[in-house]
Amino acid sequence: MIALEVGLVAFVILAALFVAFAEDVIGAIVAFAALTLGIAVIWVLLAAPDVALIEAAVGAGVTSVLFMITIAKTVGLSRSKSASTAAEGGEHTAQPDGGLERRFRPINIPALVLVGALAVPLAYTFLSLDPVGAADAPAVSETYADGELTPHGYYLEETLEEAGFPNAVVAVLVVYRGLDTLGELIVAFAAAVSILIVLKRDDIL
Image 1: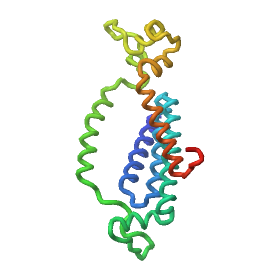
Image 2: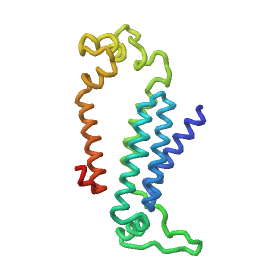
Image 3: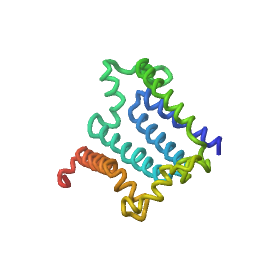
């Protein structure tokens, strides 16, 4: 299992690097869909199938398809590579072996420094978390060591009295984080409308 997890993480990192530096737009979109599927598998291994389903549907599904449709409706799938090259003021030169002069973009040093600066606190936070499956983790324990209720325990004990919902999950989605849920619905609606606009479905709009 550890080998599988390490392999998935390495695959996601390599795919993300390919997306960032690839000159071929179509290849970058395919790599993006692949890395989101890898992330979805990681969520499954972390016992979060609901998050994995959303990641696969939105990331590998809707987003990738929307990218493809956008390119097809603008420069066209067959001309996406040449269009991106022309935007930079040059054209690829064929090599004797049939390859391209440059397959990847040059490294953006300021962006690399920014990503590295963000990676440090994220890595520290990740390494500070309890191990996956720990029996005393706050996410699955009702009380801390001092007897105080964890968020998990609080929702289980206080949800019915405070929110009036016997189901703690529904109470969290509708009451405790209602504004967040509303924001997610707005984002989903905006994404659906954007897809219809790209497809020119005026009859539905």
